[in-house]
Length: 136
Image (cartoon, rainbow, N blue to C red; front, side, top):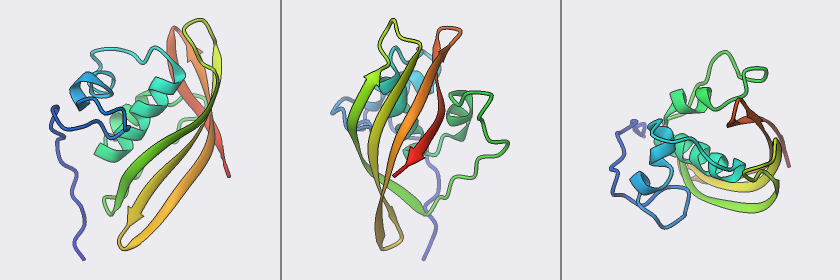
């Protein structure tokens, strides 16, 4: 079996987050640094997209520094298939913290799996950052 190699995503392709919009009009503008995610759910979606396109730099930048791993090792054999947002608590324009519950579906070779997490986010210096999560 050959490994999937990271590729530069096409900005006109559908965004992996499932919004139905083109990548450039959706999460691409956050990943490129053109804009900051206005809500915690938007950050959650853009981080999922970063996993899907294997952008470890964006994932590191959007991880709260108190919880950020020293190294991030994305597996090129894992393909992210679909994101479901199940619940959001707070996380709006005027909030300072948030919880987003999601399911992220993936393939690893011929096997399929789901990551179910309740993620915590905090707004730091005006930007939403991923803090940590409980996998369920």
